[in-house]
Image 1 (cartoon, rainbow, N blue to C red):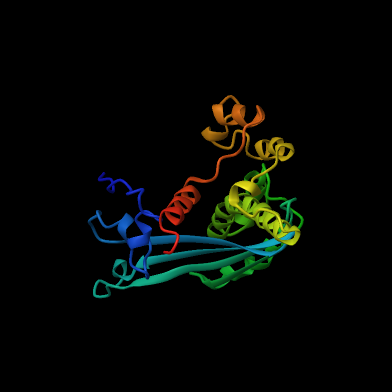
Image 2: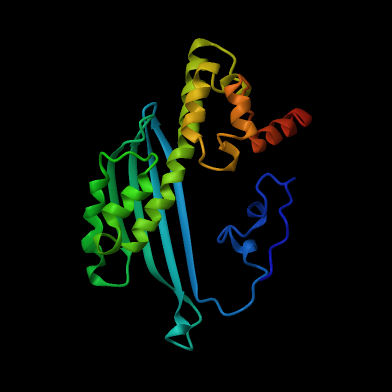
Length: 241
């Protein structure tokens, strides 16, 4: 199977930054040949609603090539388009409200399962969430596509905790007239153990036996994200841009 060309990491958003606006993933598939049969896109975004809550909206969009049934029709048909909203408490990650809407579906009876996803209220998006989702909505207890979307949303909730923490710290720093440089907003020493515990063994970077965890637990600081460091370096090099 052919592989795409390596990313040019000098770009701020590799590959996506130069893709057509109507299909931001176009360049990821530009090297493939053949008749398109099925297209699935997940989109998940989070929004801060205050110091103690945020909203996550997830969308799954499925399209099939109409020529599978109609040889003279070269267009794609929308088979599934589902929107799932989760109102989440910070920092507990407890779901306060959940709402799922099926805007496009293949069968009339599909929408009968919409309201069941409201049962997510009170569930925490923490470790064990994927198992909980399967338990609640697996098989005939839910919609396969909505449940897959829900599982794709969980990592975004975890990623959002970082943004919530930094946004709250920034608000506090502005209110107190303190230094708002990114490196000054990073977790303090007393918060590092909690940060490590939340991420421990979630991937190879956070391996409890690895160098990153050892560095942090030994008193080291969490480094700024690489894209942020590159952005800051460009701003310093061209302050008037």
